[in-house]
Length: 241
Length: 285
Image (tube, rainbow over all chains, first blue to last red; front, side, top):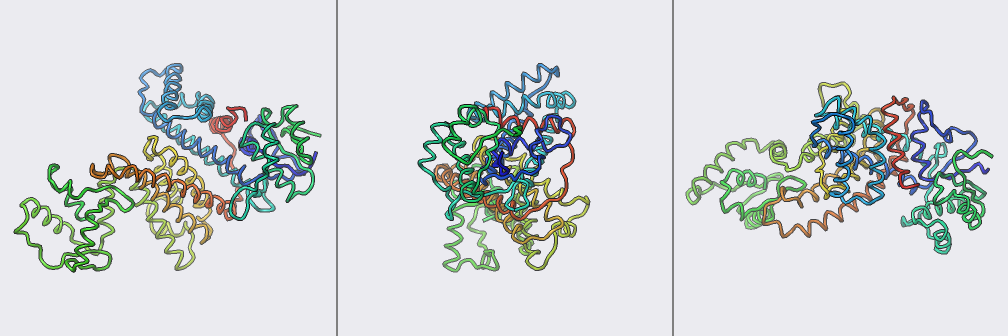
C-alpha cells in the first residue's frame, strides 16, 4: 500500500472519536505510523460544516424542546416527546431528508443521556444537555483544526485544488467519467481533489482512504474507479497490506 | 436620531408622530429615514449645528407653538439627557431598554465593543488578550473564558425561527473558530488574527441587524413595504458572511497552534461525540 494517504471526509469526522485514548472502538488508523496523511481544504470544510450544522440545528431543536412540558417523567414518555418534537421541528424548519436523518441519528444516539438530564431536572435538563452538546462539538472542532493545517508538520496536511481566482480546478471529462461510477456530485469532487493532489503534489501512487462503501469502496465500484484513475488505490482505514 | 426615538417613545401610542417618524431597529439601534433626511435638511440650511458627531439645536426651542404633551416630553428628555459628553452611554441605554432581540445587546455591548477596545489597545502596543481583560474587568480570574461565554450565550439567544436558521449555522462556525482564537490570544499576540476576528465579528453583527429588521417586532408598519428589499439585502449579506468566515477559518488554520493534549472523555462526553460523528454516517457516507 502507498505511504501517501488522502483522507475522505468520513475519516476526518470519524477520527474525532478515535482520537480519544479511552475510546474502545477506536479504529487506530490515525495512530498508525509511517503514513503521510493529507486532505483537501474543501474536504476539511465539509467536515467542519457537519459540526457547524449539528451545533446550530441541535441547539435550535433543543431550545424548542425546552419549551415542552415534561409532566410525566418515565423514559418512554420523554422519549416519545423528543421524537415527536423532532418531527415537528423537521416540518417547521423544512429540513431535507438528509438533514433530518442526521439530527435523528444524533438524538437517537444520545437519547439515554438526554432523558436522564430531563428526569434529573425537568425545567433545566434540556438546556443543561444543550450546553454539554455544544461543548463536545467545540472539542471536535478543536481536534479537527489541530489535525488539519497547511504546515508540513500537520498530522493531516491540507492542500488546495483551487485556481488563483478561488475556483476549483476543473477536470470536465474525468468528472463525467467518475460521476457515471460514483453517482454523487460531492463525492466526485472530493475524489478529484485527491487526483489533483496526486498529480501535482505527490507525483506517485497514493491511497484514497474512506469508509464509504456505497460510493467508493464497494468491490465493483472500487475496481471501476481504480481502472479509470491509475495511481490511486481506494482503501478502508482498517486495511493492512 | 436616538433623541427623537426616545421622544417618540414617550408619546401616546395614537399620536400621529408615530406614523410620521417610523423607526426600524438596525446596526446602531433605532433608525429612521424621515428623521435622518430631516436632520440633514435642517443641517443644510444652517438651522442645526454639528459638534463632534452630534447635532445640536441652534438657539432656543419655541415651545409656544407645540402641543403641551410634546413640550413636556422634550423638556423631560433634555433634562434627563444632561451629559452630551457621554453619548455612548445614552446609546447603550437604548440598546439595553429597547433592542427587540436578546442577541443584540450582549453581542454588541459585552462582546463587540470590548473587542474593539482591545483592537485599539493592540494598535498602541503589544498586550495579550488575557492581560487586556485583566485590566478591564473585575471579579472572575478566568476572564477569557468569561469573554468566550458571552459568545456562547449569544448563540443561545439567536431567534429560533426559520429566517435565522442559516445565520445560526454561520454563527456557530464563527463561535467555534473565535473561541480557539481567544484561547490562543490569551497568552500570545497576533495582530493579523485579531484584526481578522474583529472584521468578521462586525460582519456578524451587521448581518444579524439586516435579518433582524425584517421581523415584524423590529420595524414600524410604514416600513413593511421595504421588507422584500431588506430580505434580498439580508440574503446577500449572508453570502458575504459565509465568504468572510471561509477566509477567517483559513487564517485560523494558518495562524493558530495548539500544543496541549485533548483530555480524555467521560462516558457521557464520549457518547455525545460518538452520536455527533455517527450522525454524519446516517445517510451511508
